Image (tube, rainbow, N blue to C red; front, side, top):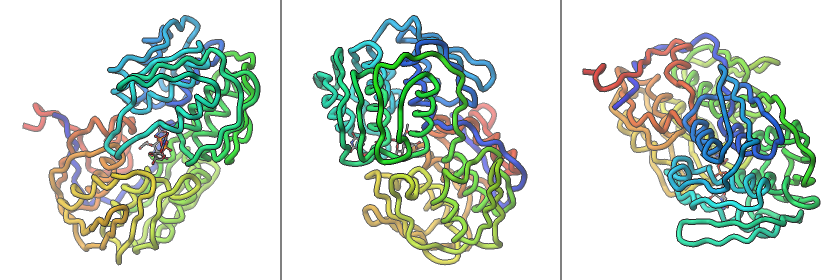
Length: 422
Ligand code: EPZ
């Protein structure tokens, strides 16, 4: 079993290049099915979820090859429209391929993505939107069979601004006759990145980043070279790591415009966050202050994906901070592990109250999910002694190399396997 061993107490300093965005490159990889030509994605992060998407593309008959951080995809030999059960289960967000496969070949099959550590992950908005475009979808047990030979553009209003549903329907709309208008669409920066990629391939997507996205279908498309946006949640993670450990860091490539709510929270805690055209500098106070209620919400609200790492950064703050998790039912699974380190956190349904303590102690803890695992690393940097973090497969889904990146900022962190740790 692999684990990270983190020895806390060191301040962080130095510069780190932020990886490409997981939650942007995953829908863009599905969108390569709509590009009539070869696509090269630069700044593509090497993550487990990206590898799974590459496996899906190859299983559909496409080719994909790496050259450094550039991933080149050729979908000209696309021949299959079904995603295997095994691959669907490897990555919950494999459902994002549904719209693209339907748009490409008029039919698609995959299994229901299932829930995950965050609670139920329904896809009712994805399916109702596809049906509104004329897709016939048969749900039999865990299997979805979709026939979308004649997708037609239509107006769709989402009951909640779902990121995945917005992306899936944008991709399906590219293959529909006529224009589709998606209202109450998600406004996340990753939606904008997807639209920019589609337009770079000859698509006609407008309004991305606003609540109303318009897609003109059946455009002549071509290949392109595209640079994936920086990962705003990875950036938030390293900003919170510095806030937790104390220090003075610079995140090259981080985009302040993607991180408004996170920077506001860190500034309220006493950090000096100074963005410039190339990145974000963060300098921390001797001790963080507790801040007002942190309520997660769709973009531009406070991102649910940064809830756990901000919580970890505030464990030793002066005062109490209230968190309200409004996106997912069970996104406090990291709390039990943080308590093992001496954190004082009480959970009441969607609300968690963090009372700042003066000390945290190293412990053996286990990642419960991707961002919960990141929170354990953030807390370990401020703990006395060694923290052993296991179940690293969760972290590897979303961080290229958290050990490498925290080491670059001066953290005392190693990644060991069983044989090494004996
Ligand atoms: C995306 O998940 C991200 N994943 C998540 O990041 C992120 O937490 C989430 O958006 C919210 O920002 C990727 O982009 C790959 P949603 P997604 O559909 O699309 C409900 C990470 O850590 N809903 O916006 O699955 C749903 O239950 C991951 O990087 C429906 O009810 O999120 C949730 O309560 C975790 N019906 C809310 O909407 C649907 O059909 C937001 O979900 C779809 C969603």
